[in-house]
Length: 402
Ligand SMILES: Cc1cc2nc3c(=O)[nH]c(=O)nc-3n(C[C@H](O)[C@H](O)[C@H](O)COP(=O)(O)O)c2cc1C
Image 1 (cartoon, rainbow, N blue to C red):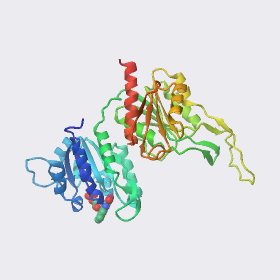
Image 2 (cartoon, protein in one colour; image 1 turned 120 degrees about the vertical axis):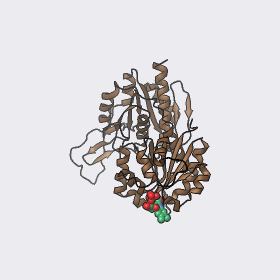
Image 3 (spheres, rainbow, N blue to C red; image 1 turned 135 degrees about the vertical axis):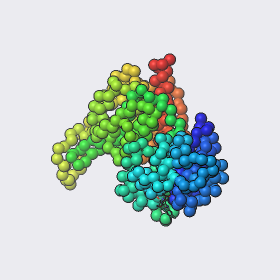
Image 4 (cartoon, rainbow, N blue to C red; image 1 turned 180 degrees about the vertical axis):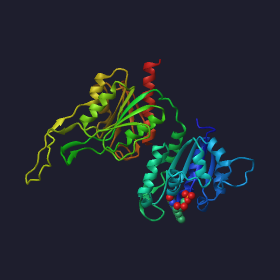
């Protein structure tokens, strides 16, 4: 599938530069042609010779080097790239690209390309958290640049925090996702819900759950990349929505219901990955409840069951639910499919390490009304998102195109 694709591997001057060798090697094993462009500073960490030996291709550093055959190298590299992966990506290169600087071969190639550019970030935690760096990332995200976020851990400088290059296997997997991007959802409208809801107790307190919205945002991003027209109805979260997606922000389950029902008739696929609160305080007090010596009892009222309602209204839409369970995962998921008239359910046990709330990974089972179960290993949420979209599209096509 990837045979003959060309990835320009940009290597910049970070301590993780040696890990880019394993990334290059892994991608080569998939039949991908790797051409490496190193910054001058990157060559202080690893030599071009090492990348040349791993990739079996020449390595370029200098924009003005005498070419072996006549060629304007940054243009030919920019044109031949199916993808530019910058790994590791320093704070410096992100800053340069975000501000239109093209003062070496790598930044000039990035400026000249129409291919997707992805930065696998690695740096000291304070550099990562620096608001200047974060605003550069946000600017580039909005322009469609991809990012593979660093992970938490002990850093080369001895500090501990977010900043370590993501694991090599994850970088390879995400690169393959970027490369394999069929536009098979073009002309489809996909509605995705994400995150938790907040149910007000009084003006300053609320009931919520641990959902961060990562799964829903990954679904929105993948659906958008595959050409869909995406509506993302999101509870409160710090995540940055993918570029080009219509984002509707809500707080409570009732607001979520209102927005979902508003769009339902206009969409082809609905994926409800939000963790909607089942109950809300029966009365949302309009002033802050004063602390007293005795206990406080809050009466809860049932929130609307959005999925159940959608199941009743379902016409042409493929309807997908998520089940985050801690006990009797399969039995509960199957009951939910029947009760809510779903096409399939994505079930995850939120107590298993690596699955569910807050993780960048998930372990899921997809269950259909006939009881068949597809089990998947630990995958990034982006990979899970693509599996969910593959299945939803297959059902849509079998229903309407065959
Ligand atoms: C030992 C060492 C390790 C470094 N590691 C990183 C790093 O992981 N991430 C980063 O953004 N900068 C790191 N730097 C700083 C960059 O090398 C510096 O900002 C440089 O200008 C980057 O140049 P480039 O982006 O053109 O490669 C490191 C510097 C040294 C001396």
